[in-house]
Image 1 (tube, rainbow, N blue to C red):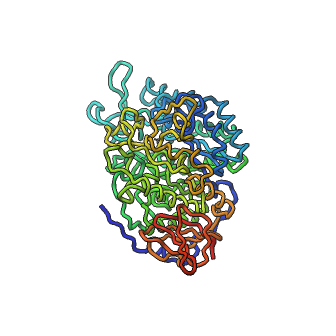
Image 2 (tube, helix red, strand yellow):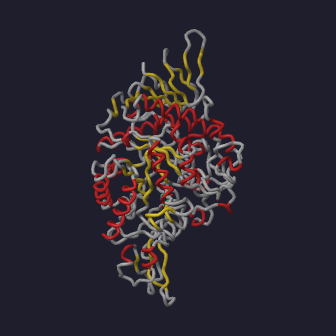
Image 3 (tube, helix red, strand yellow):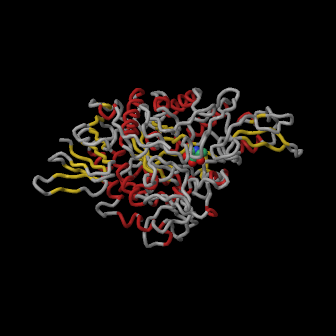
Length: 591
Ligand code: NOJ
């Protein structure tokens, strides 16, 4: 286990302007984008599973919060083996979530409220129920039907061994053997995820043209962009060579290990994936082609890469001027709550993205990781478990929330775009006591129940403290049980309540917009960094100061606090001076 090293890095001491702003006025450069996970956001029809009508009904919440766009996780026709990331029909809505007409209504309503809509595209694999895979199974080896996927003969005298040693990211082998019509064992197919998610062969031109057509289908409807699932995985190294490295449960993370807090100068945190199945140079040609498709449409449509790639300079290749527009910064997400590595990752991120003229795309939570309100409340900073069981060490709820609010205000004060995950604006913690018999994440099953998986961050949102199901839908049903604590976080208990997490986020978004922080600049401000545990930066006319140390930090006289992630103290003896307590971020008017 590695210990904390809080020695100031060279990045901390650099007095210079690290980021001078960027050319370009496209909306996505500085947008705050809110991730909606449809099955858990709001239920319109009362079956206990969130849906498109539910989302439409709750758009006023997002408008009041002040987000620029929403990203919708998949709502397409799917057997739901991986919560919709197993798509059977890319051009239809699953009946669980509604209809194409419901989608059109959602899009129109969102646009009417000034909110853009990004949808999710899952190109690395389809569902095994997709017509292509259903046609591939009975087809002969070498047939065009099989050529859309990665079918191979097995090794061994009877082909009884998988074609190579790759492991699925969800656990177990990445290959499943098929059975021929006559009952004899047949070829194997590759699935980097669950066996119900066969990988497509992106060397096949038919696959490429199909997905360009899918892009056009949704662009014609008027969507503002796409989040690209597993954007680093579509091309595999020629010959599919064996690989002895490990792929882990939550992509790219070293589940359960403490990260070296003396972060390398390139900001790497272990969020990257290497190996012959990831980050192959050939993926970039796909994104160049997609860039051209989007460029045919008006309105600066955008592509955002979900690519667990390090170092940041390697990730920046996905957002070169003729490729995608944004790439989630998972190095930031996986940086421990510690000032020195945070300064390093912020500096490295801005540097790498400036090299290609792209905005940095900050993120702290999503549907694949333990919510940051809980992650940051774990005893070991940097611990990144794939879910938390009730019998495991529990996060400190109060500490986690305090740090989460501080981390969010730090993130929202940075230049670039930021993603929020539904419920973080309420301060929701992870559900850490889900009974195993309600779990649905394939990661739990494929590890034989040794990893809790991702259900704990996917629990239905609490809207009203006193309503059945906390107002998730009209019947009180919820597809996963909500923890008792969620009543305390319900949206209706926070709206209009000064100092609530929701009001801190709402004020942050309004201030960020008014001060144009998303398109702003960044310089470290040493005069505020009175301890090595302080991250202090200037963005335009605002100083963002995060105190990660144990002791309060006293601000310079005359400092005007615009916003604070938690209570600050004013020392009224003599000249009043503001003190920022531990695990608190403030935004100040620059002196
Ligand atoms: C990344 C998605 O975010 C995750 O939820 C999914 O399980 C995998 N990709 C496979 O599609």
